[in-house]
Length: 117
Image 1 (tube, one colour):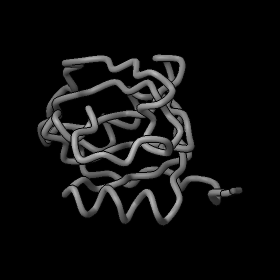
Image 2 (cartoon, helix red, strand yellow):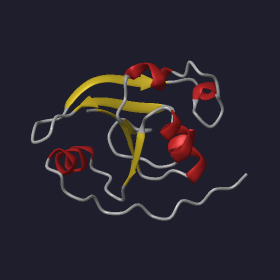
Image 3 (tube, helix red, strand yellow):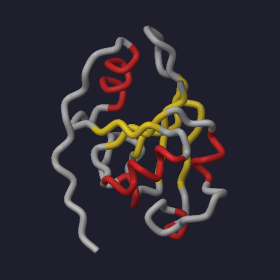
């Protein structure tokens, strides 16, 4: 599976996936070690919150899932239309979260997502 991790600092899992502009892309096989394959550092106008075109850079990465600290229902639904599962978690350690996913373990739940417009 190919997973994009929202990480505004390229060190930890961060929240509000729709506004995130930095993503770490990993290939992950069940029981295997995660392999970082790419880093995306998008301009502000290419966050998914701002950009709604069909050619978003994340859509071109053949993603299976996005791992994030938080996402609203509209974001989850939008990703679902692209065939991308959204996995939210309270875990901030990328390696620990990916290890748990690879081993089929549950992740700690994310805090409720507050959304203001």
